[in-house]
Length: 151
Length: 136
Image (cartoon, rainbow over all chains, first blue to last red; front, side, top):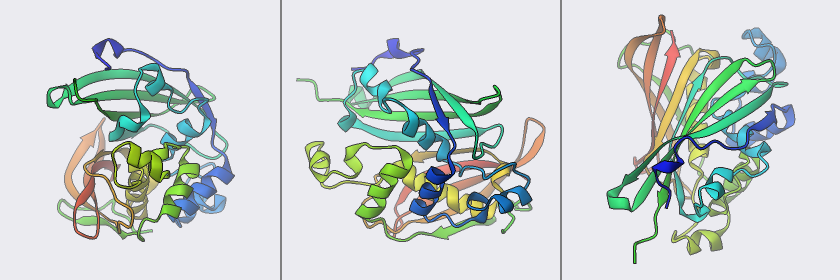
C-alpha cells in the first residue's frame, strides 16, 4: 500500500509534440466542431499563432508520448485495475498550440488514506513547459486506489 | 461564438447535450487520448476488476465539459478548469453539461468569473462536478 513516504517522488519527464493529425483525431472523437480547434485561420483570427489545444488535451499529450503512461503506478506498486480518477485540475498560463514541444514533469504532492484505509488518494502535480522554457500550465490529478481488504 | 464574458451571477452560460456514449466512442477515445487502461475497452478485464462492464474514461466526460465550456467562452480566457469525478459514467449515458456563474472574482488582479460546471446523465445523476475560472 502506498504511504506518505511517496510524497516528493518524481517521475521520468515526458516530452510531447502537439501534432495536428493527432489533435484532429481527438476533436473527431469528442465531436468537437469549434473552428478554433480545426482551422488555423479561425485560430489566428482569435489571436493564436496556430491551432490551440482543447482544455483537457494536455492530459492526453502526456499519456500519448510517455514511454510508460502508467509509470507512476508501477513505480508506486499500484495495480492499474484498482485505480479510479478522483479529481483533475488544470491551471493555464500560456495557450499550447500546434507545433509546440511540451515537457511534462510530474511529482507526488500528497497521499491520504480514506475510509479507514479502504482507499488511498494520491495527488500528482505536473508542470508543463514549452521548448523555449515558457511555463504553459500546471495540472493536478487525484488518483483513488481501492485497496485490497486486509485479511 | 457566444460570449459569456459579460455573465452575471446566476446566469446559465454553459449548456450542451451530447450523444449516447458507445463502446465505439470509448475505443476511439482510448487511442485519441493515450489512455489505454483496458478497464474502458476490455470487458474481460473490467469484470476481473469487479465491474459489471467497461465504463467511460472520466477524462472523456471532462473533455465534453471542456467542449461545452469553450462553446461559451474563449479558450484563451480560461485561467483554471477542474473537476471531481463524482460517479462512474456508464455505457449509453447521454450527458448534458451545464455551467452557471457563481461569483465574480479577482485573480492576480484580473477580473474573472467563477463558473460551476456539472455533467449529468439522462437520469439527472451528476457524474462530474467542476469549476472554471474565466477572465471577463
